[in-house]
Image 1 (cartoon, rainbow, N blue to C red):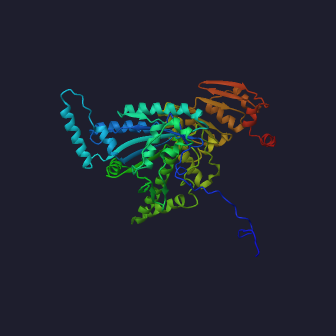
Image 2 (cartoon, one colour):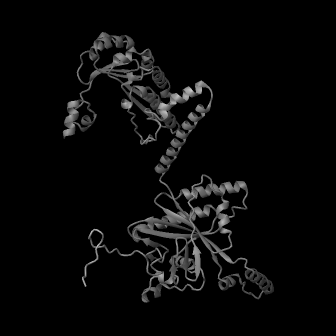
Image 3 (cartoon, helix red, strand yellow):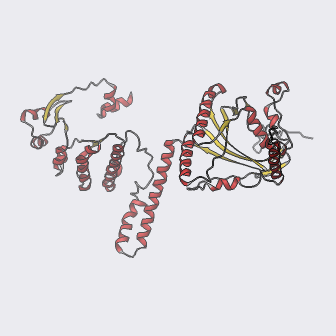
Length: 510
């Protein structure tokens, strides 16, 4: 007999991976430890607590009261930020007849009304025997946070728990936190729905007996036959999962589930989304809707018999699906940042006019939003003369210079090509609506035009004639001031701001 070690297809030894399948009912329970205060360590670095709350009379409330309850509930849910995981659990379990009979039994007091108490208790027992009140319905909210240790998360768990109880109180709902024993009893009831196993637990006897909390709550066995059904102790169950993505959800849905006459557990897992992510998702959806709208408009025009409609559809084609569809996509820039830079240099001749108009419209929108928020908006335009070359963008720019300051806007135009700027018929409107002008060295032809346009004397003009770095004129209202400003070259700010090719390349080498 020739004996050889078993190898894989490539001659390699097969790796032995430790099976992650639980071997006992206790191992199937996804928790590590329960503390006496009700904190549960689900896994390393994650801790939870549970609050039991009572029902609220929503279905029978008046419409205005429903609205008030709904608003309070929205505020309640908004309490949870993205770092807090929580779930709502609705547990309908078969009532333990013995325990329930004890709870409805009215003790005698020998005050002459014991016959009434006996009659009422008998009526409750008859209702119980008919199957009424055969289910016990309880509601829970479980929340969890991440942390390295129990000591680290305890203070935060206490704070969240107190805030939750206060929020429930504002809703008019009674609520109480569950301690460790109460949470274990709840788990025992869920894992032993057949009612055969009773819950016996004592913290003091736990360690002495060499047991864990899982031993007190685990069923006799788990059996998972397929992906949906399972056996737990002496009962059989099934699991159903709903992913609700509807835009509108009726408040009747959950009620219909819980009104079913059977033992069941309904859990709603809720995860708050970070506000910035939520805003981005909403904007992404709006962009997709806008794109769909454009497509639908184009199709609608093509379906019309008029030649004009077909002409418009054909004109839009290149901007919707063609080579110039630059603006028909989601942006990867967060335009809500405090500083936003629009660069239209690479747009090309055909798109530059459109790009300028879109940028200017976006600026107007930002100014409008900032005005409502009580904020000023600073708008800087480099190579400003390019905007004055096109009639549409020139008209838009003039409108900005005339109206911006009334809306809290502070526009600033920057250009090195003064000749093109002065060639525009709109330049007079620009100067008339500019309170501040910063002028450096100018060419001879430009100086003469500027002197006439801005009423500069020959002496003042000398400060922008063959002037050095940092020398020029300041115009503030009706005041003209010459200045000399030598900016130090050894500052880090200078290295950031300089545009000289030699200095930029030297900075990159360093």
